[in-house]
Image (cartoon, rainbow, N blue to C red):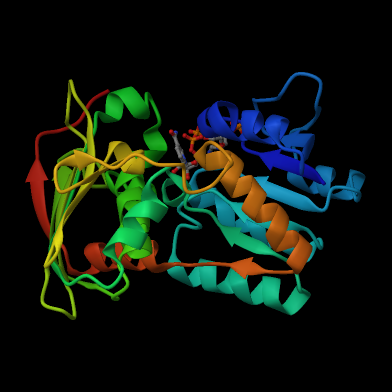
Length: 309
Ligand code: NAP
């Protein structure tokens, strides 16, 4: 199937282009980007021009930052194209609901991808937790924004999410592996005094079984980076390390075949998109984004030192 990639920046080059190249399902048929392109691939600067000139391309994958994404997604759906969305699926929940309405009305596929859910050991963690009584779940996501988002000013602008840009990855895993629905009850959000989005966040959630569920996200972590989810249950404990790549059960590494024969998060996302298009499906799980929106609604603002790159 032919796919057009829109927004040729960091994640498009790092992950989407290699995943498409390695996939038996997909051919990269065009790119749309004001500055970027991919060697040997039909390149457009303007999205409407690509839509008009390439009616053969049935699928569009959007790798733009969240704020400009809705206009592209809506235009693609209105032009009869299936759409795959980078995370987070939009800048607001309402625009994501609107996109889903458009896709349903036009019988097109729409996929809100959550790449961290495709990390190697997330499925095994979910299976191990099933049926156990959770007492405590602790998320620690500490990374260095200068290392992972060098010079990307959009993360500090309204809609750019700040530390929730990586934090929403943790929430996508938590909402996947927990069988119970949780909801946010409180948050402390640390905003650099010269920026519009938080550099750190502490979150607390209600869990219907009474478990203590908390998350700490921090973008000021130099040196070792931490992407860990720890769960203590009535029958042992679990740690997901390295963003879901490693699983420790009761202190011992739980090795095993990867949950999916395809290796890598983005190859799995593209395989899922191929099945969605084949079957006419829509996958718009917005739960990770609900928690982030709730944190902005309920969060206490703490002003911290200014941030400069
Ligand atoms: P990026 O490199 O800053 O931006 C991607 C491309 O989007 C840019 O190169 C730019 O291409 C285009 N773009 C930026 N602002 C635009 C605007 N206002 N209107 C139209 N096009 C615009 O960002 P990224 O790191 O790839 O992240 C993109 C998305 O992927 C985000 O939602 C992010 O959360 C997600 N993601 C990123 C990573 C990562 O490691 N960076 C990992 C997983 C997911 P042109 O200037 O050429 O048009």
